[in-house]
Every structure is written in structure tokens, then in C-alpha cells.
Length: 105
Image (cartoon, rainbow, N blue to C red):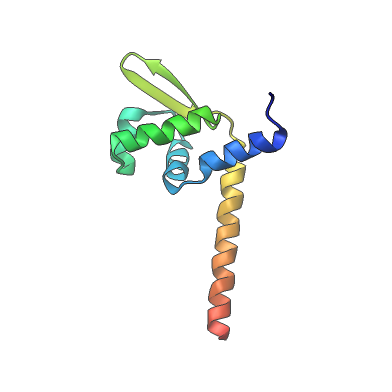
């Protein structure tokens, strides 16, 4: 059975719905990265990092390829950053509104 458009969207959003996966995508934002540099840069255990990378690749957020012993990753489509940038703007707006509400209380 084929996935519906809503299911595809949910898969992408679910892949991004973890702070560490957002950190991974943001770190890869500027350049292709090897898995060997991601764990120390993001201070993640290798097993934890591997699990998150697998989810991001399966959802189509990242693509990976081997280069000798290295596994490289890059963002599959730059439009993913529109989603993250919009989420950042929304989060900032929500926080500002909460601060305003607290100041008025």
C-alpha cells in the first residue's frame, strides 16, 4: 500500500522531532560531514549518533555514502532548512509571548 502525502510529511517531521536530530541537521547545514566528526562535535555517544543518523537517512532528510572507511552525510534537500528556520522563528515568538505574559502578571 502506498503512503499518503500526510504520511510522508509525518515521517519527515517525526525524523526532525528530536533535539539531537535537529542538532545533527544544523551541524551538517554548512558542509558535508563524516560520521567520525559528528560524535565528538555534538558530544554524542557513537551508538546514539548512529541511531539518529539512521532515522534521518530513512526519512530522506539526509543522504549518506561511504568513502573508504568514512561514511559521509549531507542534507538531502536544502528546503529542510525552511522547516527548521520556521520552527526556530515560531519557538522564539512563543517564548517572547510567554515572557510578556509573565511580565504582565
